[in-house]
Length: 227
Ligand SMILES: Nc1ncnc2c1ncn2[C@@H]1O[C@H](COP(=O)(O)OP(=O)(O)O)[C@@H](O)[C@H]1O
Ligand SMILES: [Mg+2]
Image 1 (cartoon, rainbow, N blue to C red):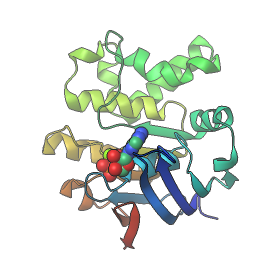
Image 2 (tube, rainbow, N blue to C red):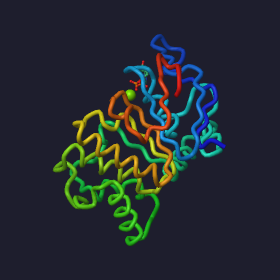
Image 3 (cartoon, helix red, strand yellow):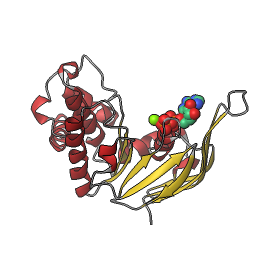
């Protein structure tokens, strides 16, 4: 059974209003566990909208979305959030870190609602920071870190709950090519550990990277072709 299955999903923003937008149109997609899938397409084609549905941040307006065998598109926001916290890590293009806090505190954020013991929390943070290659800066305030280091903190935060699924929305958009390649190599290691990864990007570095198993293209909210 695929780990991700979208059946005829559409997303309509501002439904019934004069500014209604059909951002996704009847998208069908299935992804097997352990695959690394690239979603590309021009700006405005619906990449972030599709990623946010697949990552259980939002729900489709029409159609069904099954994640890890569960029809999550039928669930309430509350259940969706709980499921996301347990099984899904998300990396954003603008990192979304909280400045004024250390890397360690930022990485800990997803675990705050879980009431971990001090020791378990420390362990989880350090395992994630090590996998993301940022353990050496773990007690630095995030605003003192470079862009690449900040993205590593964001990856560690996405990993801290040891999710099966990782989603990255244009993870290299604000990085120079050397740093971007290092970040991609870090994601490849996570793939090698068995994580399923979906990346949106129009960066040729990502498209050419050997970790990519499949390349899907979006155009005006429609999946056009897949390799
Ligand atoms: N919250 C929103 N409200 C209204 N329209 C939106 C919203 N989010 C995205 N859109 C629209 O949906 C379309 C797809 O956007 P998006 O998924 O962000 O594209 P991409 O990530 O490929 O650049 C665009 O026309 C965008 O303006
Ligand atoms: Mg986008």
